Image (cartoon, rainbow over all chains, first blue to last red; front, top):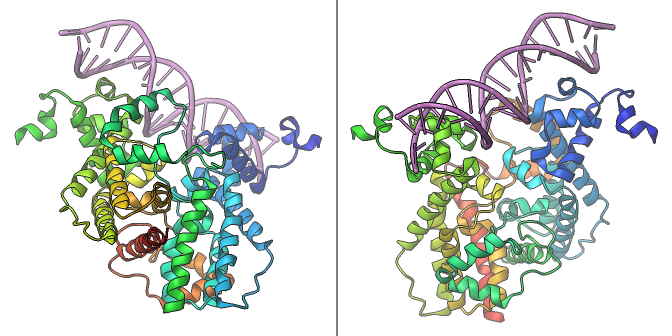
Length: 232
Length: 232
DNA sequence: ACCTGAACACCGTTCAAGT
DNA sequence: ACCTGAACACCGTTCAAGT
């Protein structure tokens, strides 16, 4: 207990794992842009240059932090109870459950999409997560070709997120003014926004990627794949 | 002609548009990470601080460069010949054509996904592009609710790109070694890769988002939406 | 082997000064 | 009004030096 405070941290020897865990914590709380070598070192009660003995620079830290999240993701998915797969169609709810489980982890580390896009990290955990989905698709009667296309169609959705459109954020006065100015040029969008109350409480991610919409898009893809698997 | 060379550029007064065009050119050729205030200024034959008179800092340059690309995108989409829309189903090929047109522009500026994710820029051109798609969906008999869900399901695809999974890149010796090491743990993925020759010549984007796969995913979503529009 | 201080080469940006 | 030089506060990283 006393061991974990900043002041006493210096006593315990620095380890790669401790460095990466701190990195994840900083990114979780303050965003990746706040994750600098100097700050990370300071929070660990050490000089910035000491980090280089445990990690290969800033890139190593980003990769390592991402790896930790992906490990957590695989772990969460692995805890799901194994599906029956009696019927060929059972692949679909099973894949759905895995992806939604992955998403819950992602939501605890919202910086991961940014980092995953920047560095296309291929970690063991990520590969095993995808491998499990491939296995389920095969059990569902997918051809290898359909499995391949299916993974591409899912894209980053397998990791629980989607690249969303930038929509005007509510509350910001300046953004409101900009919207009012361009409104005459986008009548259909304005009509849509006035019809659907978009500021639902279920919104979970900053860029308007809320749970409902994520599941809608996910199911659209899964349903389409199921249809193709049966017909081909 | 002589006017446009670097040496003589100093004579013509610097304009916001000239700054932004140079910024796009640098990002196109060398990536956004190469787009620094000092380099941009140097290429324009000016000091870095002069840029601040035409643009509000680095953020203003990124926003402005993105705006230029989105203008180009709207322009390309606008040049498509207007669809018939005699049959309710005609919305689908029309939307498809617009999205693929947007994609051709995106492919000329491959840094846009990165930048669009980082700063959720809502420009007039982007909004008008989406507005046109909304109009087509409505002509196709979509409820406002389905339009809304549909936009979310498409996500960044409306702008011609998708967040893809990081797949092992061929050629890299180190990456090959890593793959060989984890292969025993991902038997289904390995089987898939051995079945589908993935290194097709049609690959257009770095992160394995090639034209064929983009269109597969796009059509899966569009077909699913069409089905929902008819039944509801 | 592990940690450190000083330094280097870069950033974006501020500010007072030029014309 | 537009442009500039010097400076500031930050980066990630190298390197020689400590223990």
